[in-house]
Amino acid sequence: MGRNPIAFLQELRGHGDVVAFYVGPRRIHVVNSPELIRRVLVTDAHHFQRGEVFAKARMLLGDGLATADEPVHMRQRRVMQPAFHHDRIASYRDVMRAEVEKFVSTLEHGRQVEFDQALQQLTFTVTAKALFSTAPDAVDEVRRSLGPVLNGITVRAVLPFYEHIPTQANRRFEDSLRRITAAVDGVIAAYRKTGTDHGDLLSMLVVAMDDDDVRTQVMNILMAGTETTATTLSWAFYELARNPDVPMEPDRVLNETLRLHTPIWLLTRRVAEPIRLGDTELDAGAEVLVSLPTLHRDPELFPDPMRFDPSRSFDQAFLPFGAGRHKCIGDRFAWAEMTEVLTSVTARWRMEIAPGREIREVARAFLRPNALPMIPRSV
Ligand code: HEM
Image (cartoon, rainbow, N blue to C red; front, side):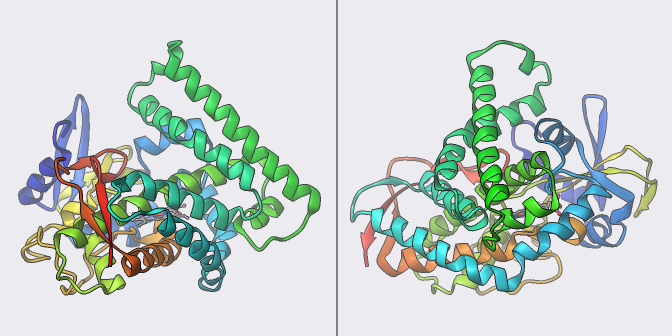
């Protein structure tokens, strides 16, 4: 699990619908069958809470939509849902178009770019500007500080004693956390002062929550919405470069990319009320894992699964955005943004993979390429 988690989880699929393994003394149950996955996420979701990783993130970031359990979660979801409605997404398209246009014009024929990093910057800016529309200075500050904060949280989740050691990285984490807090608090104060409804997420949040909760939601959205989208786009450009004959139909390309390279590779849950899944009795406190990419690479469900083939059809077992009460709130937002990036970039550039570096899949917070050096060629 430590060395190559995806291969390990893929191998476990062959051992049954629910398979247990141990991490030290902790027993973890991997749910493999599409029917049981649906029960965990949708029909029997009330038997479960979020798992361990979320508990750590919550300690550091507070109770936000991507970390909270019931009943707080449902209350927050109701407040935030309207900002992600169909008609609202249409209004974010102007920001998306403007930012993507700027991005496309920075590319130069023949000049190599670290495309994964460039996409990360782009998706960050789009999310921040669309949802917190009138705060360009804060956007820059948060962009600078978010990386150290996210890395710090991941390290703390794995090594609980780390935060008590006075290292340079720890000081940087604390400094970045302070800066982000100050920047976001500044925006919240400005929104409260003018009382104007800017028609964005932040306007909705400030009338519904206190400052601490609003800041938490801002951080949650930036955490959940930036790297997921950037990673999917990185893989899409990678696959298009390797399969130049594939027709550029954005919906198909994106679906097949999300199947083969599902960025959220682990959903974790903890049993709150005992439940029987298949032949397995799970007591309260049991840890449950669902691995989306290995589901999407099951040859029984998706024949010749490692082949990138946008013409394949998708069925019930395709869940890149999850399902049920925690289903991604930003799926339409992500889709609109990714479509805009794909169509605008490919209209002007053919992105080639730069020679000389091996590109591998790595399982970090998300399932992403280790690097993506690319060279734009005018079309
Ligand atoms: C391709 C891009 C994306 C993918 C693949 C993705 C995937 C997912 C998945 C699988 C979940 C469910 C987690 C679970 O069940 O534990 C989730 C939840 C979430 N996503 Fe996304 N996501 C993407 C983009 C976004 C964007 C753009 C935003 C916001 C702007 C966002 C915000 C959230 C939030 C807030 C949650 C928690 C929802 C809840 O628990 O009620 N995501 N996402």
